[in-house]
Image (cartoon, helix red, strand yellow):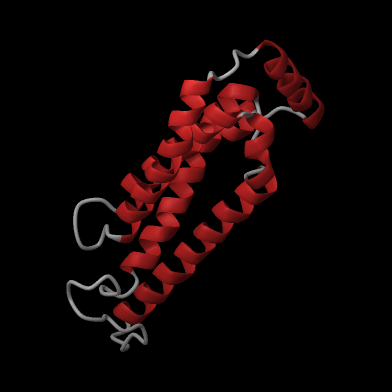
Length: 163
C-alpha cells in the first residue's frame, strides 16, 4: 500500500534524483570510510541472524531488518546511482515475488503433507546443526529477503519517491 501511494512516475523519479544529487549534502570522507567497513559487517551479521534463526534468537524478520538497515547505510554512503546498479525496481520486485512465491509453495507443501498424514520428502537433519529443522531455514531466508526489501523500499520511497 505504501508503494502504491508513494510511487512516482519515472520522469518524476529522474527529476528528484537529479535534484537530490544537486542539493544533497555530500557524505564526508569519514562517513564513507566508516560505512565502507561497516556495511559488509552489518550485511554479514544480518545473514547470520537469518541463517541461524532456527537454532537461536533471531530469524527471518530480525535478520531482514538488519539487512534492510545495511542497505540503507550503503545508500546513504554511496548515493542513489551506485545503489540502483544492483538494487533497482526490477531486481526488487523479482526478489520479493520470488521469495513470496517460494514461501507460499513451501508452506502449502508442509500443510498438505501434515494435514493428510503424508511423510514429507524434506529431511529434518541432525538437531542443532545448521541444516536441521526441515523447511524452517529456507522459510527464514524467504522472510528475511522480503523484510530487507520492504525496509529498504519504504526508505527509498520516502527518500526519493521510487526504488
